[in-house]
Each structure stands twice: as C-alpha cells, then as structure tokens.
Amino acid sequence: MGRRVRTGPGSRPTEKPLRLRRDPQFQACATEPGDELYPNGIFEFNISRLIAFISAHPERFPTEAVELSEIPDYGSSTRLEDAAVQAADLLDRSS
Image (cartoon, rainbow, N blue to C red; front, side):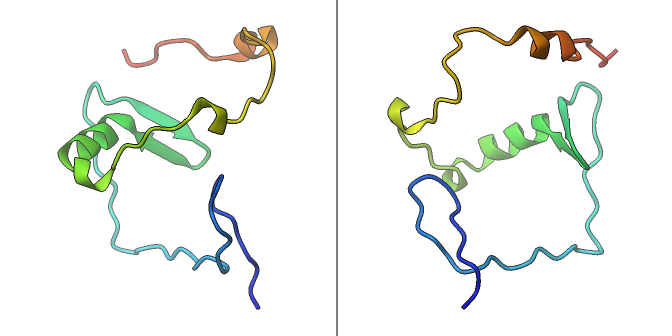
C-alpha cells in the first residue's frame, strides 16, 4: 500500500498523491507595470493576476466561514518579534 498523506486540518488521509509533471509548452504570463509580485523560493507569484482570476471566476473559489478555534495558534506573543522585523526587507523596489 502507498504512503498515506493528510492534506490539511480535518482532512482524511489519501493515497500517495500523483507526481506533478511539467508541461513543456507552458509559458508564464508576462508581468505588467504595477503588478504585485511575491517571490517564494524558485516561484514568483503574480498576486495581481491571481486576484483578477479569482474575481473573474468566483464559482471556482467558494468562500466558507472558519471558526477562529480552527486556526492554529503558533505563539502567545501579541507583537512581532524584533529580530524578524529587523531582518525584513521593507524597501519598496517597484520604482
């Protein structure tokens, strides 16, 4: 039997997920001036395009109420950690 994987809180274990396969003909959409980009590792997410797509197809992204008790609490601090703030890159590089 394959490895069982949980996909999130409250989800049921599933069999090992299928491997992602790269589409050799895939071409990322070009960025436009003013697009909000979020680099994360080897990926760069175009937040502006994501928001536009979600707004154009709301039926594909149903909203649901989530109880605050379902959101994990990863710390008891009510403020940001000073070291994290000092290390953050807060410069606006869009201009």
